[in-house]
Image (tube, rainbow, N blue to C red; front, side):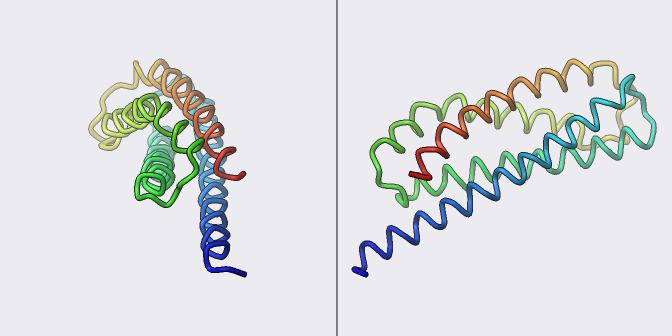
Length: 148
């Protein structure tokens, strides 16, 4: 196998591995999202705090993997296909907005023991869920191109 073909094959394998890892984290994230949502009405109970802490941790891991894993790979020049680069550039602003929303959610709830009331959690969780759904659409669009 020529060196260029071998390098291309290795890049594709790395991309597929990254996509698989991203999808696994996404599945874990949604599972925790629904576990937290089922705890309504929200209160300062230990169970709510525990699940919310778990959710926030996987949320940060998930958005970091997408943002710094997938996009960093593209921005470092490991991706040369014009179609992938074009789509990555087009969706980057929306993708970044979803990352920022997730980080803001985490920042608010990371010191959970200092939160006296959870009155806004239901609405914030709903809004975050919508943003995550948008992010998944964007990721899927980009990942499909990376798999080709």
